[in-house]
Image (cartoon, rainbow, N blue to C red; front, side):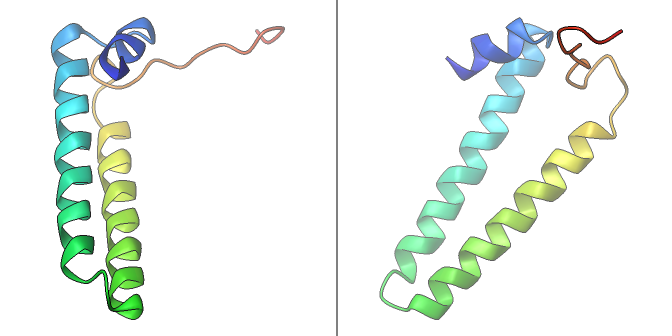
Length: 80
């Protein structure tokens, strides 16, 4: 479903597939790290913070790519 949403937003099919793949890989890696430290609240919170920071860097890197690869700017109703 995520792939279809990204395509509807203007990404090519291949870019949508790659974006979903990257997010899934990140999510699975985060879950594995958190499983390893599930009994240590401090370590669990640290892996959560690190994962969020890494995801932010991935989003920033994606936004810095050329326009044809990035999500298109959507117009808000009533704006010009």
